[in-house]
Image 1 (cartoon, rainbow, N blue to C red):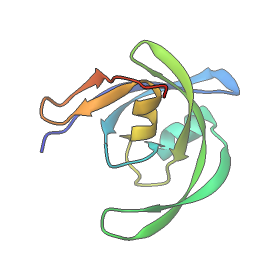
Image 2: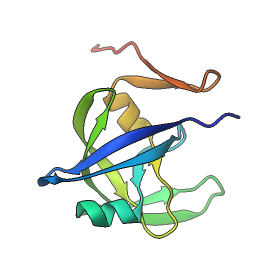
Image 3: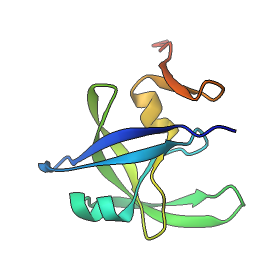
Image 4: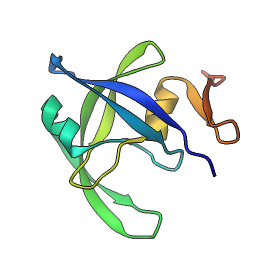
Length: 119
């Protein structure tokens, strides 16, 4: 299976002067985007709530969820993100992709615009 990663620029919605850029692995099996701990600290992101998540191996873990302004595909949106802890990798999850109207083509390893439905 191929690997697809994209550069993301993140901002703190409460303090847009705090900006960071990183390379994020596109993970179509992950619900939320995971922001690594170093970027969480640099941006000063704050948790809104704690959520339980299941890992591929069946383990359950808890992580804080907060908001970040995400820039992708020349657009910018405030998105709920997992505030990563030590050793958590940078992942771009499906909620963020769908919010931007994008989908992953796993064969071409590219993002493309999806057909969006209102009804």
